[in-house]
Length: 147
Image (cartoon, rainbow, N blue to C red):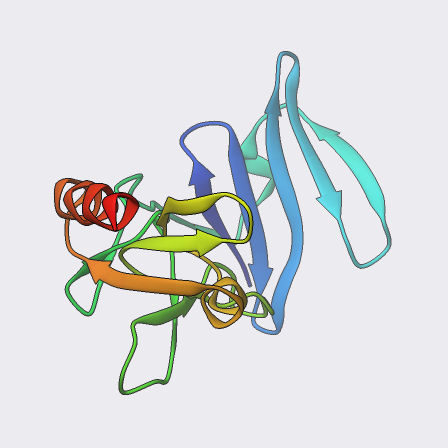
């Protein structure tokens, strides 16, 4: 049985089977384009009714909170870590992000703001955070730049 997860409202869906992602559907002016990633083919569909055994799962466009910190994604997959709020944006994704607002000291650029930076970026540069709000992050950014 196929399941369609709406990613962008009325524009883009991910098609999954019981074994994971099998394709995508996107809205075109003249119908819907179904891309089957198993055989790399595209098919033009007049409507979504051709997915007779499909469950449509509505996703929210609101960004999630994770461990009390804001994120920049409506869908996230938790990464186990006791000290930080780590997450991925895709189930099989390799990139790990950290929830919250941060300030980072880039080489030659000084202190800059960051929202949900990659974990590898935090490991590479001096940083402070996480901060719960953009306001708090901006306040600490101004302080850091004056130091």
